[in-house]
Amino acid sequence: MRTIDWRDGRVVIVDQTRLPAALRTLELTSVDELVDAIARLAVRGAPALGAAGALGVVLAVDQALSGRVGTTSGWWHSWPSCERPDPRRSTWRGGSIAPRAASPKDGRPC
Image (tube, rainbow, N blue to C red):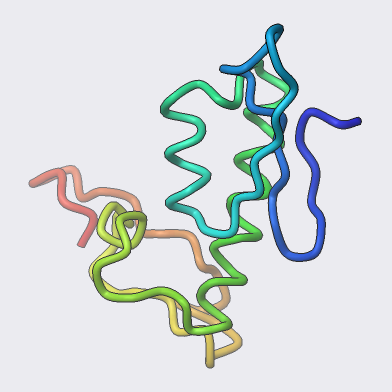
């Protein structure tokens, strides 16, 4: 059994908060669920956190492409940009989906 895995469009993790008393897995289907699992230490250790971050990007893209990202979704509000990526366009800001660096004048990203 893997500590973190991708299965059928879901991130499956071993809930580290239950060990060693019990072995419980969590199936996470959204970025918000993954962020919550990390915040409450259900995911622990550098390798698992790195994999969780990478799989979180996959979840974010999956959510955006399937239209499951609402205007109240928490991770969109923390996106450091003035515009949201449009999943219908093949490029965003000239081929990169990376947010712009903050302006040295005011510290804002836009």
